[in-house]
Length: 447
Ligand code: MV4
Image 1 (cartoon, rainbow, N blue to C red):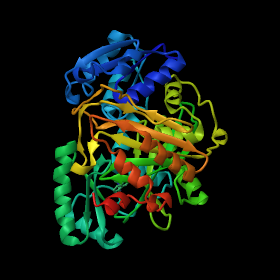
Image 2: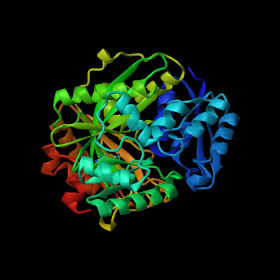
Image 3: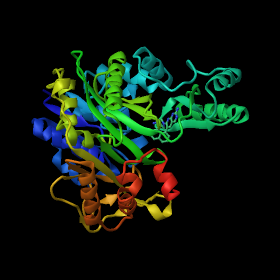
């Protein structure tokens, strides 16, 4: 087991990792930017080093500064959390060359899965369903027109270096396809330094179902069942839950087994999520792999009883998984509402500022993962999420009732939050009946 770990992140996930380390008896080194100097969670770390000014590009994204803090802090490994450097293969490579453990997949697996076209090829090799589309990258316009002819409109032009919705464009006829190709390439080159694009049939109003995977360095790959993340707005997840509502056990099992095959074929290790879209006939299609721990990992922890952060650390020390697939018997239902400091009445514009009263819900079945507190200053430099309200009950209906009660109990003054919208969503009949798809929120609230 590691003696000391550096947490290369901030906010609620840094606190989450600090807590797991404390329970494992591992010392912790935290890093912070000038903007986070007074954050309370830093006091829970054994040491904390300032790595730069507020901008992420000058602090949390600076590989040399994170590595320097790791050297000064004399750590054996780094946990990257999510976002920032967590899916940067170069960072994972630098850790390896500095003989510092990286708590995540290998640089090679991260790189191949970060190339969405390459990931699609791996999915085919793993006998995992992919959306009908091009057999590789699109080089010439006429290739795209030919593929579109074959699969039928509408089609999606996707950037190979994209992901999470970035670099995607829908085309509904030949003319818009020509334009979309051009625009997607320019955007992808500008955003990712890689103009490569591929084509997929556009699946209208899909559900987003993703499968949690954990894999050790001894060939063991276990799935921890699925999460439904369809309740989102413009690729920003709002609510995640497990199990996925209105999904047959047959499809559930097939999706989870496909995710295991995908991880095996990609030679994946540590925690990762295989993301699918599901159409109205429950056909499911591989979309991409998120090679990191995700924001929504707690809903899986609640229904399986597995501490995913501790599992990540155990895997990184070279230990075999402490469980087999047969040991994972999910029970109950868990729902997570992301609480963002954003103003729903102003286009969800970030609402930074100093928090006044901070009253958090409690009681049986409630977990609140947050680094925020009274007098905490929500920074404009980072993601606007200030906490995650997670509920766990024996049924989805009871979990929804508990979530509704909890959201009504929350009192956060000083900043606007998404709590009112979350309450409307969980009390809406489309949500309570589980009639979800990725367009539900934007369609129902025209936002
Ligand atoms: C799709 C799709 C429909 N058809 N691919 C969005 C980003 C990335 N997670 C993949 N995404 C999608 N890919 C095809 N061929 C619809 C989406 C999509 C989506 C997927 C998952 C979660 C939320 C989404 C929101 C909008 C679109």
